[in-house]
Image 1 (cartoon, one colour):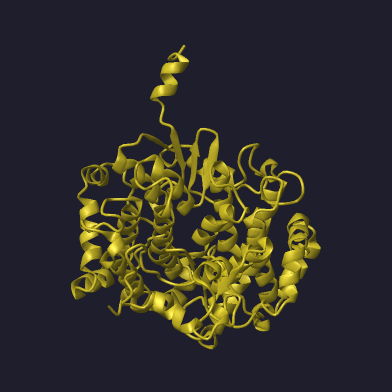
Image 2 (image 1 turned 45 degrees about the vertical axis):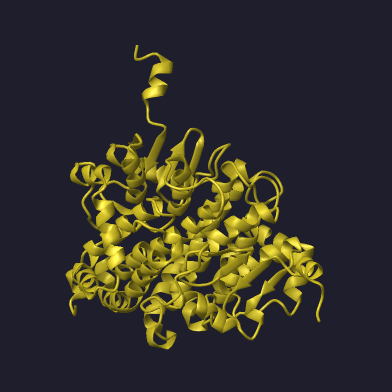
Length: 259
Length: 259
């Protein structure tokens, strides 16, 4: 017979996240918001229907429903009848609801711009390093091109983005405490942690060298501070945290061999 | 002596857009929002200080000010004391203020996801076609890689994104009238127009062939409908509209030579 409707509705998580199984990827950034705040969520990637669920959203016949437009790709967040995708958009939606950002005013746009820039630098551009000439083609078929792109990423782009994050931390708007914005932890600190963690996995020697250079001390201090948050720490040590694999952040030693 | 302070303040545009001079680029999407709505704006790209203004924002010593974090790259929008960047963020901010989107509720997130997806497909991925292995390197030094990436874009990615836009139009949330969302023109229709226009400039034969195929009739009808809006039409015919050049949307005939 199951539980009475009212009780079941109350105990079921409000939020449902759909993403590819087996890789942290973009979904991981969303998970960190839930984990840091202790918010219950359904993680479809951990269920048997994960691949079907992802494919159903981006199916060429899917035109959405009466409430929601169709989706191009995961992650997809379902909250009640609302279904949204695009990582920065999901973050924008969740931040005020989870107490990780303001619900109105300048801070909404400042945080969104910081999130978008970090995602550009430490997620989108990292994906390009191993798939520079064909998103659908194998890495093995674009290794030479990947080496060229990776060199440019390691030597020009990554330092430029790290410097940007350090500039944000050095600015007045960051405030005291070492967080990126407004003196307390917000979702963009979690975005920075996950994206730098992934980049570190992909290019360990490069990131270590940049860390030792000392120019971005605030950035690495922030990374450590997020990692030590009690809920984040417990999550990272749990089996809910998926290992890196052949997703966005990949480790190919040959892509940093001249480091 | 100049005008009295009060009068001058009233006649000066509220909005100031800073972007690279000489190319439409990301700044052009912002301009279309102002032009469609007849909103006065200061276009710094048209002034002599354009390059200096762009460089000042992303200068490595710039850590923002008391109100605003520093910026990674243009476009930058200044409105009163607020200074924001990242194109999708600027659009999010302007839409409700210019009557091109709701100020709260589901529509905010639906429109933002549509804008982000169109920008991914018809702007970011187009830039990658001519600079697949090095953002800072010359196109001439990555022509072969650009050919490979362009082929993948033309054959796989572009049709997939066009299909996505058509799916949005085919969905219930699009409504009547052929606009992308909610039955009337919103900022995402302007985003689609500019991004498809740029893609058409870059890959004219490819886009023409896809148009003739008839699978994306709604998308091209929407493109034409935006182009015929009185304010947009007048703008496109004015000398305020900058010609395409060596920016994001570039035309290299060799990148579609097997069409």
